[in-house]
Length: 114
Image (cartoon, rainbow, N blue to C red; front, side, top):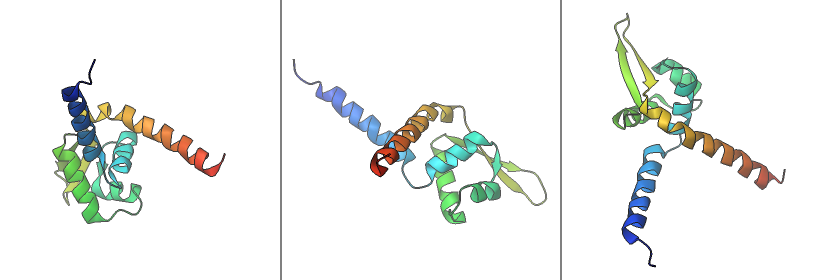
């Protein structure tokens, strides 16, 4: 029996799509913050994700919104505020995030010899 190259190619493409969707230094942190407290205003999210600049946060939020993982709501307040929340679809990513956290914890212990 030979290897199903079409299925293998499809798997590689799916993996690449998932990694590209979640790539970057900040997306996991943003998703984790929104999974903990949602919705969050832009300023509160920036404070929660330590070290992120407003421009980078804005870009990451835009990307997450385009990929249907978060919603952006403009609130009719004085001054106008914008809040972000996870979509139902975003919760499908949660097992991936939890698996990465578990692996990262094990890896950290292994590398540190504990």
